[in-house]
Image (cartoon, rainbow, N blue to C red; front, side, top):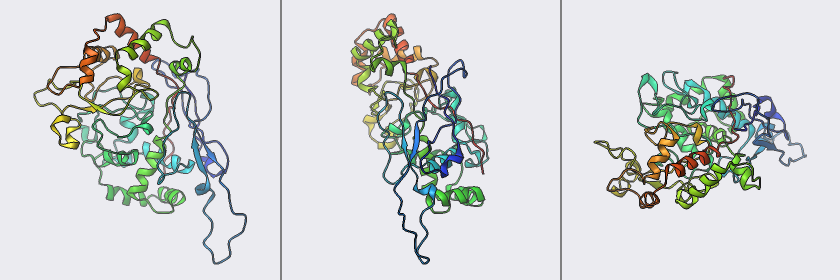
Length: 380
């Protein structure tokens, strides 16, 4: 992969028109060295200011930190990042979110942070089938990568969160994951002078649940992967893909894979039943756990495929150890069950050969590009 070294520098918040850079080491499944530096994915934009000084009895103008807006620069191949109107991006907010993302004090016993299960050095996921939370409790779900989650229309495998902001709070109170009480956590963070000051600078308030979620979500929106061999090929570089990868791209289209794993993020974020886990005595409910609809039993959100070669194991339960194993199950049309998706049945009729499947794996490897690997910052 050709990955970037992006430097996060908190001292740049206070500048009105300087580039926000992500401090990172290169990410690679085998090596983290000798990777070229590329442009930062996000930079602040100077906003117009009123040159008229306020009268003595007027409220002082917002601080420089609050006046700096930020444009997220996306790597080659990705669309503009959607940002909610009630949570605009600023460098200071992203930096605060980064601190919270790495802070283990967000868990009840101080053992886990967001980065524990969504590790930047592991393509913002982890390499275990399911996650281990506080008290060494083992959960039932594989941790999906944070990479490009800014584009997802829902969050979690079952889509129970409608936004990154909503998603950010879920694991904190989950009794198996971080096991904290949000009201208690807010009180604890307000007792830390550094956090209290930063929340005042960014939001103009003490720590609140809502602003805690907004800060983490803003940080996660900067975690992007693009500029892959596939993107360079689409941009006109015919040599960016190998012959096998080019064949895999054609198989990917012809077999119908692209209908669910839709470019450019390689997911349509809909829910399908591929039969994963449906052979258990008591299968996981999947989307049905959210909608209570029997027709949603065993349905899970279509995973995005960028960096998929670096996020093993696969599926919601981590049951496929390798990408080749995951491709083989999908190529076979999934695992038969009464609620199997019609799309999966159609893929199964394609009778993809071993050579076709190998080409698909090679093509998916071409979706690995540049993403930030960020070290934990100094915490308040």
